[in-house]
Image 1 (tube, rainbow, N blue to C red):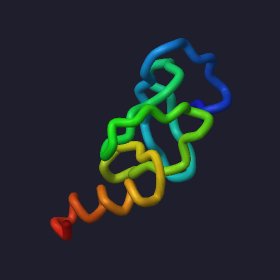
Image 2 (cartoon, rainbow, N blue to C red):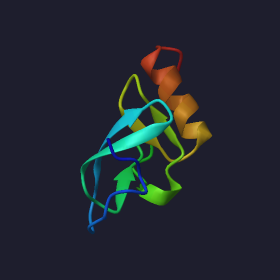
Image 3 (cartoon, helix red, strand yellow):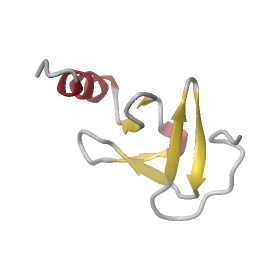
Image 4 (cartoon, rainbow, N blue to C red):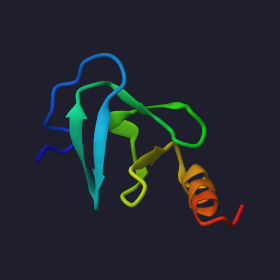
Length: 74
């Protein structure tokens, strides 16, 4: 298993597996896109994701919005 600091990156969007407390790089890349906003998130700045839904989020507000949407609360 690799975490975000052990894999060489290429330009473009990465594909990741989101695990508890770490990520696994499936396809090398420099960034992922927030599932809520569509904004690019550089891998070294990625702090928020959902293991359950396998989605990255740009910040805590986007994470909360996604949680509410998935639970039918928004």
